[in-house]
Image 1 (cartoon, rainbow, N blue to C red):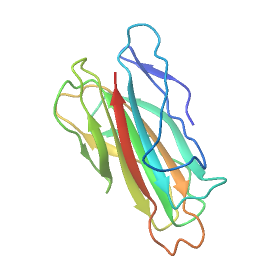
Image 2: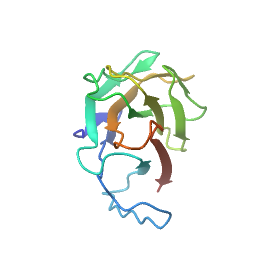
Image 3: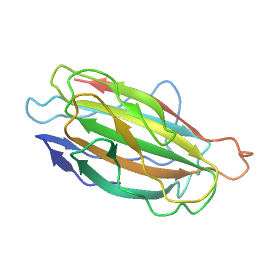
Image 4: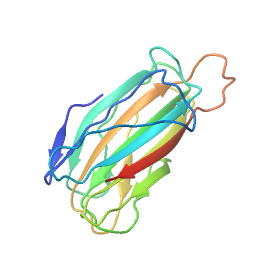
Length: 168
């Protein structure tokens, strides 16, 4: 979805895999370069389209002031969608507080002083989307946001995300 963004010597990228096989037996493989600290947040979406699931996304935002916000997406093309927000920042401890109705999926700290988090929002009407959060001690954060379409016939049940993470 996004190309690499580098801030405070950290590089982040947002990717998605459409129509992957779900379930508990996922295996994720990555090959880090050098002696970097690597963090991976994976969100499994159920109830989404199997083709054309990605609707809107906004370019990553390198923000230097609280509340830290994503860029604004284009208007969603259908009413029922899942909005996912991701961020990494320069705090060494403590949790972030998501705004704009977002629910935290994962908030990940590590001893390297770089943290990452993800949150979701189920929307039931079309419109533009933007995430925001606050956190003590944060002076810089990079955020991404994307919307994903619900499949027809789900019956208005919001699609949900499930997250897993790994730091190595």
